[in-house]
Image (cartoon, rainbow, N blue to C red; front, top):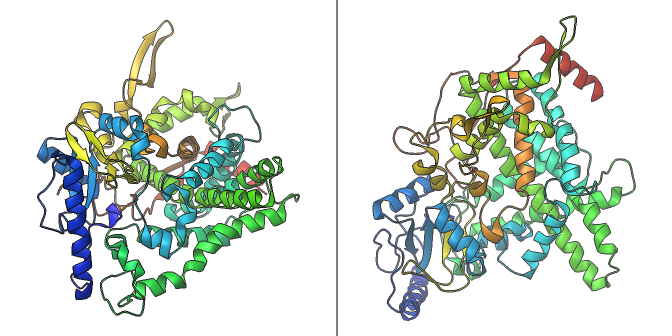
Length: 567
């Protein structure tokens, strides 16, 4: 059962299902008592017999509810039981490190996503696969190509990304100048184009690219079924074995589909998963050796595979792994990085005082004046990061203020475990509450609900006088926001550099703010997720209608140069 789906249970499940379902639940509860040797589960809300905490698990704003549970029970680890399955919620960084990293051998699998991976066919996205040799092989391919920053190999993914991110950010700047109203659409297009180029090396049209539009439709569908209440088969996996002809009304998948219609609907859109995995790959292979296809993850990985002179069977398995890993880059990077960039723009659009401070820092580095008083402006590069601590602090703060995945991607235990005297059964779903960790007042100060980049900055006095720098004593949000243990995001440095360069470049050329002048926080005055943010599995502003204005004559001249160089 998937934890993020556990908040929904229909009262209309057919009566003939009740007996076997209840029997399974009672058996699992008996088996648990036998294995636990009398040790309790972590504390949590009291549940109902058999069904447990079905009605306590929220449909929205999950991170806030789980944080409140931890506070109410005075524990940094709490639990709930849903239909016999245990869900464990980790509320502190130290506990996350202890369980998800130091005990990674027990905590590195994933929950079963029946609707998304088995019905719809999205098991090609290896980030959601259970811990296995197949998962390890796909991750190895990813890590081999996207080596750590500073790797000297010019063919590595990091080197390719460094050059391409500048290009696509420059395209984005021109798009903002030409279509200044819809930041949401422009960011989606930029990140989608970059993901396609990195995964497959394919050329991407600036507007209306078919693959960019397709990955957006795919992401919307996939995220829909990761949202609580939209797939009861994730709550009761045994429903997947019932013939679709049996009339059991119980679920809403966003369209009016009665009974087992969700299964028919799933089959009707399985072509999307096949296209998602194969379309970019086949286009890339067809274009190898032509000027239109660039070096990419796919070209690099296929060349590495063929260099080993594999048998036909080994090559087929290797190609399948490459296709899955490329699809994961194509899909997950596009959606998560888009969310991070949108949140950062939203933060600065609602905090013009912070924006102006950052722009002053950028101008001091990027504007030059000749002997005749003529001022010229250059765009920032990734090499400028150490020279722009105020900007870097703002990027860090946007990741802390509204984390892309407030409860992260859940883990699943593969063995029984005991922690602080609490029993954690094999098969438990384990959620690291990233939002709660990033809103820890002891770590980040009393004003954690506010957007305040100053929390990451300190002034240091040395032989050359006082200078501003990032405070190394404050935990970097990236150590939480990209996950833990063996499941940490292997492309975190790629996402970080994309976010930083987009923010730096946009602020160099444009002023922007919301037309309403509002300054909402992620958590509203009522203690719930503000209506302007998506409260689901991924979090970002629901819309972003900014007013972008070129901020200086130097910026206008630089945009003109970009337009000429871009053809």
